[in-house]
Each structure stands twice: as structure tokens, then as C-alpha cells.
Length: 305
Length: 117
Image 1 (spheres, chains in turn orange, green):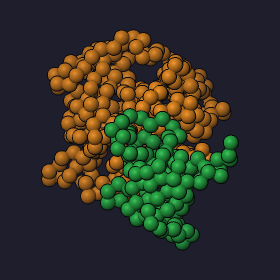
Image 2 (cartoon, one colour):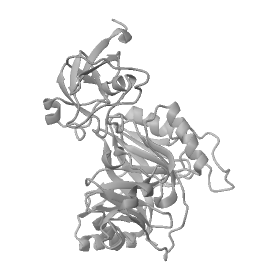
Image 3 (tube, chains in turn cyan, purple):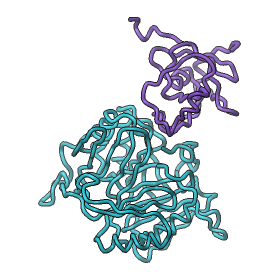
Image 4 (cartoon, chains in turn cyan, brown):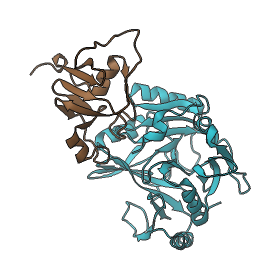
């Protein structure tokens, strides 16, 4: 298990802040916890840190991802390993990100910006930590639980996999390879804890976003989310369906700027230390991605922001 | 001011020369969809650029700001436009991306008129 704890925040560009506020707050049910000119900070009801999503007005796509790390020592170790690997690193000071302590900035081989941090102001979950109810009664819309993972396209998923594995101690839960004999990595789903993935990459252009995902409780919550997307005229890319890879049940949909989101239910297995990595051969890619239709839609491999 | 619903703009779609009508504030993609025609559909929100068309004649406006990373200034000058966000202001002539065709998904309901472009 890695000393990286989880995906702590997604910092996203949006073309229209007010439309985005409505989508993330009213349709998905996140709470706006802070705002600055041109920026909103949001969290889900089941998250305890100050925020998990930063929306910044202007453009589309990903600014950066923040991953929370156990300790300052672990962060320093990750930093020096990253430098030895040969990527660009930097430091940021406390307060550069609202309520976030100091940290290490790493540019992945795929040009994605990752920030490692250890401290963010504690806010507590909506239901609290003493004799909590099962869920808050005032939850809006989909009522997303937490931001779970992100998937990015990149030119060399194999290189990113090696980086995440060697530098940050992520474990590959599943991957797609050209063939078992000549296993060029086409896609990789990697875990820092026991969840099937905390980060994933598929072949495509560097630096872009494919989607980031919210955890929901179960399949019936996925169906209800689909109903809410119909009511709120949210464009659906695919679903409700199931992924072969990770076994998660899913809907891919788009925010008002065209950034892809996912609602994802499925902690179908645990990635323990000795978990045997699952390999999919590329001839089974479509089934791996969309288990029922067994066909990729055009958008899956062409729509990025 | 005239009721926006009374605004009708003709869209000529090359290479086949199909005609559809955009009503009011409808985008190019929406007008095609209402006529039972399906073009490349991505995010439908101006973020991915999958639904780009070439605007050959006429004027459009965008109902939302479009990111430079999606549609560059050079593309704008060339007349490339995002069909999911572009609302015609006049009659327009657009051309599909090379090798593309519209698919008829409501063929049993509507027959778009075919005439000279």
C-alpha cells in the first residue's frame, strides 16, 4: 500500500462558473464551501476535508490533481524519487491552495500536474463522526459521496504506470495490453490503497482529462443519477452500464463546459498487497470498458478536455 | 423586438446539399437533430471539438464562450465552428468534416428536403 492516501482534489477549468455551480451543486449535490472571484470550492457530503473540487473560470480541462499523502517524510521521499526518475518537481507553500498546507508539485511524464500535500483544513462530513445517521436528509440531486478517481489520456501509459509504481508506490490493479506476448500498455488502472483505482491512464493526447469520478453507493443510485441527468438536461455519454475493468457500474456524462464526469458505484474487490494484476488484451478492450454493449462509442477515445 | 421563435434560418449542409431550418435560438447541432439527422456528437457543451463544421457562408454567434484550446483563433478565421454551440444569425452554408456524412435517425418521421446548395 502506498503512503499516498487518496485523490484529494480536482482543479478544473470551466467556461461559465455560474452554470458549473448549478451542475456541481444542485445536480450532483456538492456543497459550495468557499468562493473567490472566478473560483469556487466544493465538497461532497461524505468527505471530511475542506474541499475536493476547485472550479476556475476560463477554458476547459484539468489544471491539476491533488493527492493527499500520509506524512511530510513520505512526501519528501516521493519528491526525491521523482527527481531521480527525471521529471520536473517543485514546492508550493501553505496557503497557495486555499486551506491546503505546503506540498510538492510533480509534472508526470504525461504532462499532467500532480500536487502532493499532507494537510487540508478539516471540515467534517455532513453526518458527523459521532453516532452518525446513514445519510444527510438535506442532500440535493445525485448526492455524490466523494470524488473517487480520475482518468487521463497520455501518449505512453506504460511510462506513466512505471512512474506511479516506482515513484509513488501505486499498484496496478488492471491494465490493457496489446497482447500477453508483447505487452505494450494501452491503459492502466492503479491503486494507492485498496480501491480498484485512484488514478488511471489510457492512450491518447498528453495533458488532457478523460473524466473524474464520484463514488455512489450502489447500482440503484446510479439509475437514480441517470434520472436526474434526464430531468436536468445533462448530456450523457454512456450508461447506466457496467465496466468490465474494475467491475464498477457507471454513467459517463458531461458538465456544462464539456468536461466528462462519471458516477461510479463499485468497490467490487480489494487491491490487497498480493492482488494479482488483471490483464485485458486489446481485442477485449471494448468489453473491458463497456461490459454490456461490448462496443466502444466514438466519444470514449476522442472526447477529452 | 420579434419573438425569437419567429426567427427561421436555413442551414444548407454540404456535401449533400440537405436543407434544415434552425428555429429561434437553436444551435446548428440541435437543428440537425430535430430534423432527424445525427452528426458527430461529443460532449454537446463546447468542450471537446468533436462536432466541428466548416462555415462557408452566413453568420453565427456562440451561445457560450468557447475555450481557445477547443477552437483556436486560426480555426475561427478559417471558418471552423462548433456546431453544438453555434447559433445561426442568418441563413448559413456549412460543410461536414472530410469523409463525414449525416446519419438519418428519424428517417421514418421526416424527410429533409434536398435541393441545390
